[in-house]
Length: 186
Image 1: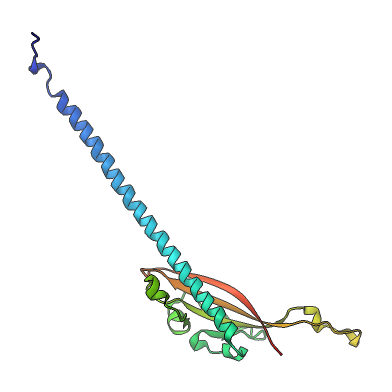
Image 2 (image 1 turned 135 degrees about the vertical axis):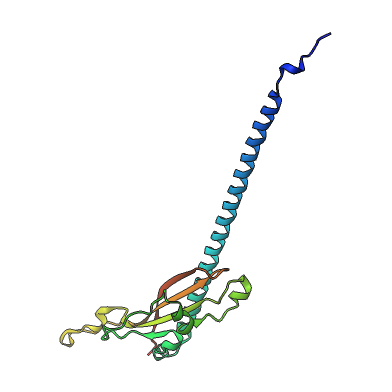
Protein backbone atom coordinates (compact mmCIF):
# COMPACT_ATOMS: atom_id res chain seq x y z
CA UNK A 1 0.00 0.00 0.00
CA UNK A 2 1.19 3.45 -0.96
CA UNK A 3 1.14 6.21 1.57
CA UNK A 4 0.44 9.78 0.46
CA UNK A 5 1.92 12.64 2.31
CA UNK A 6 -0.62 15.45 1.87
CA UNK A 7 1.42 17.86 3.92
CA UNK A 8 4.21 17.98 1.32
CA UNK A 9 2.03 19.39 -1.53
CA UNK A 10 1.65 22.84 0.06
CA UNK A 11 -1.06 24.30 -2.28
CA UNK A 12 0.62 23.87 -5.70
CA UNK A 13 -2.73 22.87 -7.26
CA UNK A 14 -4.33 26.05 -5.90
CA UNK A 15 -1.61 28.30 -7.38
CA UNK A 16 -1.83 26.61 -10.78
CA UNK A 17 -5.63 26.89 -10.72
CA UNK A 18 -5.42 30.61 -9.92
CA UNK A 19 -2.94 31.21 -12.78
CA UNK A 20 -5.24 29.42 -15.23
CA UNK A 21 -8.26 31.37 -13.92
CA UNK A 22 -6.48 34.73 -14.31
CA UNK A 23 -5.37 33.77 -17.85
CA UNK A 24 -8.92 32.82 -18.86
CA UNK A 25 -10.28 36.04 -17.34
CA UNK A 26 -7.79 38.13 -19.35
CA UNK A 27 -8.68 36.21 -22.51
CA UNK A 28 -12.40 36.81 -21.88
CA UNK A 29 -11.92 40.55 -21.27
CA UNK A 30 -9.85 40.88 -24.44
CA UNK A 31 -12.56 39.09 -26.42
CA UNK A 32 -15.24 41.39 -25.04
CA UNK A 33 -13.19 44.49 -25.89
CA UNK A 34 -12.55 43.24 -29.43
CA UNK A 35 -16.23 42.42 -29.96
CA UNK A 36 -17.22 45.89 -28.78
CA UNK A 37 -14.73 47.47 -31.17
CA UNK A 38 -15.96 45.31 -34.07
CA UNK A 39 -19.57 46.26 -33.36
CA UNK A 40 -18.63 49.94 -33.29
CA UNK A 41 -16.79 49.64 -36.60
CA UNK A 42 -19.73 47.81 -38.20
CA UNK A 43 -22.10 50.54 -37.00
CA UNK A 44 -19.84 53.23 -38.44
CA UNK A 45 -19.68 51.41 -41.78
CA UNK A 46 -23.48 51.21 -41.86
CA UNK A 47 -23.73 54.93 -41.05
CA UNK A 48 -21.26 55.78 -43.83
CA UNK A 49 -23.16 53.65 -46.32
CA UNK A 50 -26.52 55.19 -45.43
CA UNK A 51 -25.12 58.73 -45.65
CA UNK A 52 -23.65 58.05 -49.09
CA UNK A 53 -26.82 56.39 -50.39
CA UNK A 54 -28.90 59.26 -49.04
CA UNK A 55 -26.67 61.83 -50.73
CA UNK A 56 -26.83 59.85 -53.99
CA UNK A 57 -30.65 59.85 -53.77
CA UNK A 58 -30.50 63.64 -53.41
CA UNK A 59 -28.23 63.89 -56.44
CA UNK A 60 -30.64 61.81 -58.54
CA UNK A 61 -33.51 64.08 -57.44
CA UNK A 62 -31.48 67.17 -58.43
CA UNK A 63 -30.69 65.75 -61.87
CA UNK A 64 -34.37 64.88 -62.36
CA UNK A 65 -35.27 68.47 -61.46
CA UNK A 66 -32.88 69.73 -64.16
CA UNK A 67 -34.30 67.26 -66.71
CA UNK A 68 -37.87 68.32 -66.00
CA UNK A 69 -37.25 72.08 -66.05
CA UNK A 70 -38.47 74.05 -69.05
CA UNK A 71 -36.28 77.09 -68.63
CA UNK A 72 -32.90 78.03 -67.22
CA UNK A 73 -34.71 80.89 -65.51
CA UNK A 74 -36.04 78.30 -63.05
CA UNK A 75 -32.57 78.21 -61.52
CA UNK A 76 -32.42 81.70 -60.08
CA UNK A 77 -34.10 81.21 -56.71
CA UNK A 78 -31.53 80.98 -53.90
CA UNK A 79 -34.26 80.59 -51.28
CA UNK A 80 -34.83 77.00 -52.48
CA UNK A 81 -31.24 76.23 -53.40
CA UNK A 82 -31.25 77.19 -57.11
CA UNK A 83 -28.41 79.51 -58.05
CA UNK A 84 -27.49 81.18 -61.32
CA UNK A 85 -23.79 81.70 -61.87
CA UNK A 86 -23.21 84.57 -64.26
CA UNK A 87 -19.89 84.38 -66.09
CA UNK A 88 -19.47 88.16 -65.89
CA UNK A 89 -20.04 88.23 -62.13
CA UNK A 90 -16.64 87.65 -60.50
CA UNK A 91 -18.08 88.21 -57.03
CA UNK A 92 -20.21 85.04 -57.14
CA UNK A 93 -19.14 82.28 -54.82
CA UNK A 94 -20.79 78.93 -54.32
CA UNK A 95 -22.85 78.47 -51.19
CA UNK A 96 -20.95 77.20 -48.17
CA UNK A 97 -21.80 73.50 -48.27
CA UNK A 98 -20.51 72.95 -44.74
CA UNK A 99 -22.79 75.56 -43.17
CA UNK A 100 -25.77 73.75 -41.64
CA UNK A 101 -28.15 76.71 -42.03
CA UNK A 102 -27.66 76.69 -45.82
CA UNK A 103 -29.04 73.15 -45.93
CA UNK A 104 -31.94 74.00 -43.67
CA UNK A 105 -32.96 77.25 -45.37
CA UNK A 106 -31.50 77.33 -48.88
CA UNK A 107 -31.86 73.85 -50.30
CA UNK A 108 -34.56 71.56 -51.60
CA UNK A 109 -35.51 68.28 -49.97
CA UNK A 110 -35.54 65.34 -52.32
CA UNK A 111 -39.11 64.24 -52.87
CA UNK A 112 -38.63 60.69 -51.68
CA UNK A 113 -39.49 58.43 -48.82
CA UNK A 114 -35.84 57.81 -48.04
CA UNK A 115 -36.19 58.96 -44.44
CA UNK A 116 -39.02 56.59 -43.58
CA UNK A 117 -37.74 53.73 -45.73
CA UNK A 118 -34.21 53.60 -44.29
CA UNK A 119 -34.65 55.34 -40.94
CA UNK A 120 -32.23 58.20 -41.54
CA UNK A 121 -32.65 61.41 -39.55
CA UNK A 122 -33.62 63.62 -42.51
CA UNK A 123 -34.47 63.44 -46.20
CA UNK A 124 -31.57 64.09 -48.56
CA UNK A 125 -31.32 67.70 -49.72
CA UNK A 126 -29.77 69.31 -52.78
CA UNK A 127 -28.67 72.59 -54.34
CA UNK A 128 -28.35 73.29 -58.07
CA UNK A 129 -26.13 75.91 -59.68
CA UNK A 130 -26.82 76.87 -63.29
CA UNK A 131 -23.34 77.54 -64.70
CA UNK A 132 -24.40 78.86 -68.10
CA UNK A 133 -24.53 77.59 -71.64
CA UNK A 134 -21.66 76.08 -73.58
CA UNK A 135 -21.36 75.11 -77.20
CA UNK A 136 -20.91 71.37 -77.55
CA UNK A 137 -18.67 72.15 -80.52
CA UNK A 138 -16.76 75.38 -79.76
CA UNK A 139 -15.82 75.74 -83.43
CA UNK A 140 -19.50 76.08 -84.31
CA UNK A 141 -19.37 79.68 -83.15
CA UNK A 142 -16.41 80.57 -85.39
CA UNK A 143 -16.86 81.59 -89.03
CA UNK A 144 -14.13 83.91 -90.28
CA UNK A 145 -15.39 86.38 -92.92
CA UNK A 146 -18.33 84.11 -93.76
CA UNK A 147 -16.03 81.69 -95.54
CA UNK A 148 -17.58 78.26 -96.06
CA UNK A 149 -20.40 76.86 -94.02
CA UNK A 150 -20.66 77.42 -90.35
CA UNK A 151 -20.31 74.21 -88.40
CA UNK A 152 -23.25 72.92 -86.47
CA UNK A 153 -23.15 72.46 -82.75
CA UNK A 154 -25.65 72.02 -79.99
CA UNK A 155 -25.87 74.40 -77.08
CA UNK A 156 -25.70 72.64 -73.73
CA UNK A 157 -26.71 74.15 -70.39
CA UNK A 158 -24.34 73.13 -67.59
CA UNK A 159 -25.45 72.58 -64.00
CA UNK A 160 -23.58 71.67 -60.83
CA UNK A 161 -25.66 69.69 -58.36
CA UNK A 162 -24.58 69.20 -54.77
CA UNK A 163 -26.45 66.85 -52.45
CA UNK A 164 -26.19 66.16 -48.75
CA UNK A 165 -27.22 63.01 -46.94
CA UNK A 166 -27.29 62.20 -43.24
CA UNK A 167 -27.39 58.82 -41.55
CA UNK A 168 -29.14 57.28 -38.58
CA UNK A 169 -27.62 59.54 -35.95
CA UNK A 170 -27.48 62.89 -37.75
CA UNK A 171 -24.04 63.54 -36.22
CA UNK A 172 -22.30 63.58 -39.58
CA UNK A 173 -23.16 64.05 -43.23
CA UNK A 174 -21.90 63.13 -46.67
CA UNK A 175 -21.73 65.45 -49.67
CA UNK A 176 -21.67 64.41 -53.32
CA UNK A 177 -21.47 66.66 -56.34
CA UNK A 178 -21.94 66.18 -60.07
CA UNK A 179 -21.99 68.22 -63.23
CA UNK A 180 -24.90 67.74 -65.58
CA UNK A 181 -25.43 68.97 -69.12
CA UNK A 182 -28.80 69.45 -70.80
CA UNK A 183 -29.26 70.23 -74.47
CA UNK A 184 -31.21 73.38 -75.20
CA UNK A 185 -33.97 72.70 -77.71
CA UNK A 186 -34.47 75.53 -80.23
